[in-house]
Length: 243
Image (cartoon, one colour):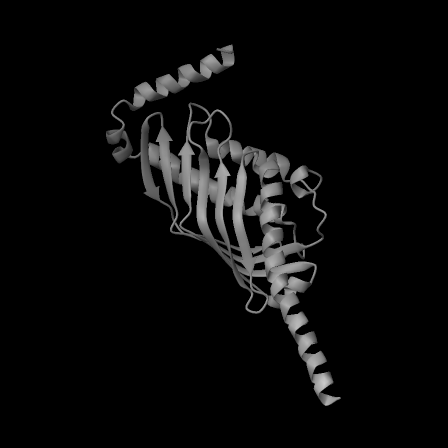
């Protein structure tokens, strides 16, 4: 009898442990699906996440290979990408309605700032985020009731390639830290969190890019800088005229 009870207990423990491990995989797959589904309506561009995983025991996890494409009419394929985003969450919160994310570290992302005469790729994405971040828009419509809090967001080791015509220059970005995303509201949807974080990131990138455009090193590299701006202006006129 005792051996039978022990076998039953072991089976129950095995099932519970298996379910707990499955929870981490399930959360990872859910995060990947959410980014791939709701990212494009938010940014107005291609958004893909290759994979994600969170350990239900330690609360540590990562997102792998995030890619955000450029709006139409820009030459380069991507606006930015990152190979790995490290996560640390409170394990118990994984079972609740609000996931408490203690830290998000975006490691060595690569941005491309492509400018035309009166517009830029990142500025266009920012406009799309502001337009599509409302609670009734497609980017926020999810069957999941889970919300998130992000207590500490870090972007480090980043760089931006500033591109005008055929001239480009890559420069490093400063470290960026944000705190208490969604805390005041008791949790926000992933799209709302992204709509709060991404503008801060893209504004910093844009400010660095604009400063680079006026830097002597960039002007020296772009000996035909004025000609390229003239060509960009002509390209814009052609678009307006429908050529």
